[in-house]
Amino acid sequence: MSDSISFHMSADDFRTFGHAMVDWIADYHEHIESRPVMAQVKPGDIRAMLPATPPQTGEPFVEIMADVDRIIMPGVTHWQSPNFFAYFPANASGPAILGELLSAGLGVQGMLWVTSPACTELEIHMMDWLVDLLDLPAKFKSTAAGGGVIQDSASSATLCALLAARERASDFTINRSGGTGRITAYATSQTHSSVEKAMMVAGLGREQLRLVETDDTFAMRPAALAARIAQDRSAGFIPAFVCASVGTTSSNAIDPVRAIGEICQREHIWLHVDAAMSGTAALCPEFRWIHDGLELADSYCFNPHKWMFTNFDCDAFFVADRKALIQTLSILPEFLRNEATKSGAVIDYRDWQIPLGRRFRALKLWFVIRHYGITGLQYHVREHVRLAQEFAAWVAASDAFDVAVPAPLNLVCFRHRAGDEVNQQILDQLNRSGDLYLTHTKLDGKLTLRLVVGQTQTRAEHVAAAWTHIQAAATAVTAQRALKVSDP
Ligand SMILES: *Cc1c(COP(=O)(O)O)cnc(C)c1O
Image (cartoon, rainbow, N blue to C red; front, side, top):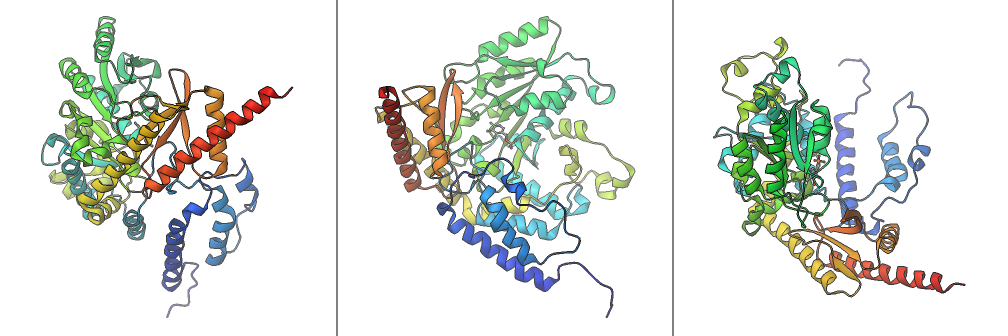
């Protein structure tokens, strides 16, 4: 026996507290509806409860857990609540959480094939499965010239796509000798802000991002894109990248990918398709129209961590030509050289992303897909869309509210007819109540409420209750305002 001291948690304690933690999480999910959806704290409230300095000596784990309840939970917004209808869903699920736990337990660093072959090979396989599951173009498969990789977020996927586009358009010279400031990219005012950020990070400059006009559904106008490209070319710019959105964050607008793709092919411009939330809908054949023309894209991403029951982070990023991506992001310092890499027989995913290190994220995806099966995944996505459509029909039939734009899938944009101030008051009252959580956007300059049906446990009764609360809030707000007006 060694008599050296250890401060580590013993295997027995890990077992005890691990079981307790799983119980805690199960209880949390089981009783989540009793909590106010949106955290009801003020800035600084949580920090005020934390000690000013770290502990000199280690503390018992039970005390740490007690502080989770006392300090942390009041400041948690319950994204996993079935009454969470804000922003976009950020799904967790039993199999995903267990996959995440196993990934932490294995503690693998999967930067190269050789640093854990299963980490890379399961990921390649899951990405190929996703191509089948969503019926994506076959060129995105590892068995073709393309392939998929898990990124931490759609923002990173977009950045990687933009970098590859930048290099392809410059004959891979910008990586070596820097840019000339002539490369331009195209999106719309509705495109996710990550594209503008990617332009900044890639050193291309946000002013070189052209915002192409949209139509009355907030989708990109292909003719306006073609015109802007022509204008830029004649001014000596190098158009290199277009981002089309399948389901914008603001209003779920779906850009016409086929028409945009035809322009990109003709002009030799990299087309990236961002389907962060809505891509998941393609699990169901009846929603695959959203991907019409995707075979013309150079890259594509969607987030299983939004609507496919896989906890953050897990963005699935696909490229049609993996060589362009690898050539853009590959560097090989001596300490990473190894036989497998040299043989060319393996994928080293560190060449497919910005960081070097990577977690074993494919496990949670594997668990989710195997747990639900195609049937289970399709059932829940279909149900979410059905419930959102039902909600949209209630709104459309009401005297007080209107549907603001067509709702193609699971996001409904709507507003009270009495204008911005009333909509803001309704929103504030609902979110203060803790009964549900909604967020807003601006469409045509008007404050618009958004209801997204996509949380793992959201069912018909939650959407029905949301509509009841929304109507009640509207009645209360308009009554209060009537009183104020009549007040002398
Ligand atoms: C949510 C969203 C993003 C950003 O996703 P991250 O994974 O958080 O970077 C990008 N694009 C669209 C269309 C989105 O809805």
